[in-house]
Structures are given as C-alpha cells and as structure tokens.
Amino acid sequence: MTPPITDSRVLAAMAHPVRRRLLDLLKLDGPATASALSQATGEAVGNVSHHLKALAAAGLIEEAPELARDRRERWWRRTTPKLLWSSADFADDAAGEAVAHAVESLNLERQTGHIRRWADRPRSEQERWPLGPFATEAWLRMTDAELAQFRAEIVEVMDRWADREIPDDGQVRETVFTFTRAVPGHP
Image 1 (cartoon, one colour):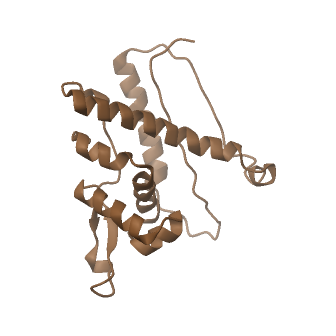
Image 2 (cartoon, helix red, strand yellow; image 1 turned 60 degrees about the vertical axis):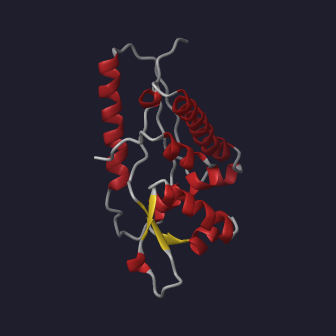
C-alpha cells in the first residue's frame, strides 16, 4: 500500500508541470536517464537534471545505480507507484493547506489539459480510436462511506489495468490517460 503524501514540501516539489511529467514518464516507461527524459519531453538536459534533483530531494524518485553502464551515467526511478494525498491532511497547517489547494488546482488543470489536447487532435487521428475514448458522468446519491466504497472500487479497476502484464501478442498498445473524480455537488 502506497503511503499518502503528508508533507507540503513534497506536494510543492511535485506541483511543477515538468516534474509532474517526469514522474508520469518514470511511472509509464520505468527508470530513465536525464538524457532520455530530455528527449521524451523536449526539455533541455540541464533543466531535466534540475527537476530530477528536486524530485529526489523530496523523496519522490531515487537513483538506480545498478542500471548505469559507467560512473557518469545516472538512472532515476520512482520511489512509489502512486502519488496519493488528501487536502484534509493539511487542514491544521495554513501554509500546507494553501499548497495542497494549489496542487489540487494544478492537478485538475493537468488532467483536463490531457482531455483538451485529445479533443483538439485532427479528426483523422481521433478516428484511429473508434471504440475506446469515452466520457461518462452521473449524479449519484451517497453517504460519505458509500462514496469511499465507490472510490475504492474505481481505484481497484484502474489499478488492475495499470498494473497488468502487457500481453506479448504483437498488437501495438499506445498510452491512454484516464482519470476519475467524484465530488459532492448539485446540478
């Protein structure tokens, strides 16, 4: 079980868009060097190195020295498979609460940005995926405990797909971004 992030400095470290993208790439593709991450992101190697050091200082990534071919090569990997936090964990600390609120807002922008970029892709590219992409929504009536159960069920499905062994069947599998949110509200 991944422990939740309860240190506002760690939240602040992962809030930067480049750092969050680096964390995503390390999760999706596994350990990598600053050079490989630079190629994947289009960022300068020095900039990537700077952000990797900030992520390492926050304990979100660590070096993977066993992957290096020589002393100069530095490989990095995530220290945890998930990034979990709750704004409620920072309610007793005004500065921490402000960081958690800002990170939550940035995270929502990041998530919706992925969806917007898909919607802006050329129709010809979208047509390559005639069955998969979807959006769904529902208004539900729940207690807090029922919402927690709903969350656990959704997370279990997403974890099962994220952690599955990729079949070696010759089919090309592209990355797919998915996210789910459930919050109390009114129409």
